[in-house]
Image 1 (cartoon, rainbow, N blue to C red):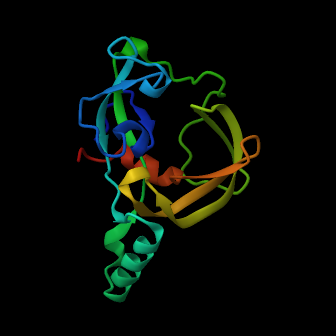
Image 2: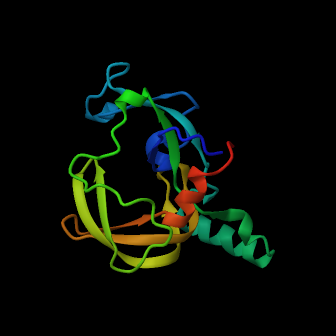
Image 3: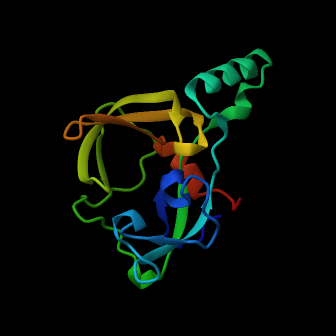
Length: 182
């Protein structure tokens, strides 16, 4: 459902606190861990998300459960396309489409390409990286929730941090932003 309403998009685990959040919960910035308090630091309200399918609490159990699903030809039931959640900003006058330190977006990419520039803004500040792998199926630890399998993910390398991050493919995020409510 496309409403034209601006939305804040981030990872499922960040906005829902690993699934503990409920629709309408305050999203605060800075986060509580960094001294943020509600209501004064409330920037948005949790709106919707896709709960990831968890294969198991550990990598070993997740692999075993995945093998069992493959053997029974039910592997598609465990695939996750996005690690994403949406929140509604506290008000339209509060929304600024520019992120401090991040160049103005040219729109939502439909496909990632190797070498594409990526700019990330978050707890570690503004970081610059590049798409190093595309169209990966990856087992990812979703915090205390367990291990999930994400398909069609991209991998970005951030040289200053010396680490890789998996992310939703641009195509899959665009699908969520235009999805019917769930």
